[in-house]
Amino acid sequence: MKFSAEQIAGMLNGTIEGDSSVEVNSLAKIEEGVQGALSFLANPKYEEHIYSTGSSVCIVNNTFSPSTKLPNTLTLIKVDDAYACFAKLLELYDSMTKEAPRVETPSFIDSTATVGENLYLGAYAYIGRESVIGNDVAIYPNVNIGSNVQIGDGTIIYPGATVYRDCVIGKNCIIHSGAVVGADGFGFAPNEKGEFQKIPQIGNVVLEDNVDIGANSTVDRATMGSTVIRKGAKIDNLVQIGHNVEVGKNSAMAAQVGIAGSSKIGDNVMLGGQVGLAGHLKIGDRVKIAAQSGVGGDVKDDAIVMGSPAFDSKEYKKSYMGFRRLPMILSRLQELEDKVKELTKDQK
Image (cartoon, rainbow, N blue to C red; front, top):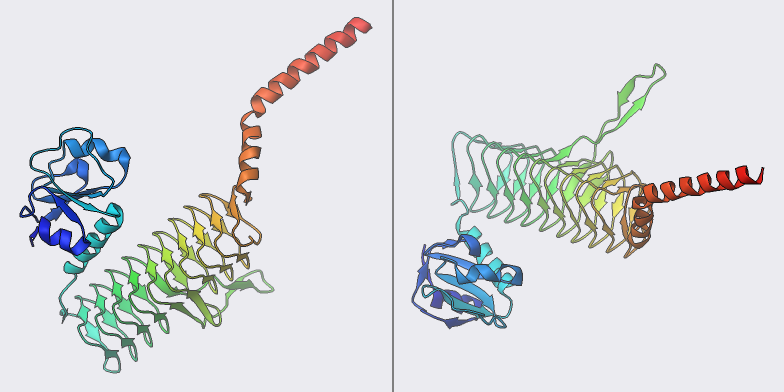
């Protein structure tokens, strides 16, 4: 599908410098632009590429002023926030690539299940008994939806994902390929013989509205009650969330985060990649935890921590400076010891 610079400027409330009739039919990074492509420039770090880009249209900030001649084939669209406007176009483009409503074969919908309007159900997908699927839902091939599952309007579940029985998925959620929502929590207790006995996990998982679950991530069901991911939370790929965990609103965690059972994460929390949280912790609102940190205790609101064990980031950086200098300090200490020995020897 083609759009003219004039049409794009109208969508973004921007102003045009160049040929308003030029058309684009693809999106590209500014350094990889080709004829017919739309790019954007928001970070000055990449400004050099705008003077050689092959893109036909580029979205820039109103404050942008070229330092040298731009390509004759390039049309600019000036806006208040180039990054936000390009993100808006990406969202529009993504919406245009969604699957048309249909039910492919072979697939299975239990006779007791209820499905809404405009469902896309891919081949080999399965919807279990008494499940309720909302309107405008897309369930891609090889997805397994267990019994008594609820899925809200506008949710997308990509190929190979699994939602176990009794789980509740809110509106406009995205569950990526290979993700598992509602597998058993890691609950075992040793008996008198030292053998592990499985503790039945009879709870569920609740994803509130606008939650994203990344590829191959797992959210375990509660032992009792619910594991809850609050509205707007974003979970990256390869994340493990244990049983009875609660993740607050608009919190985000990068790949390979692991959260042990029953920990409570506040609102607007950010966890870097490979952060590990012990069980039964309370992480306050607006906390930031640096990548690869190991957290073994509660963290108060607004704290920024790093390290393993994690503590205040400023104190950690001071400590790390000392750690880096440790070989030099040890060397100087050895020199001092040698001098003391020499002085002591002379005195004798």
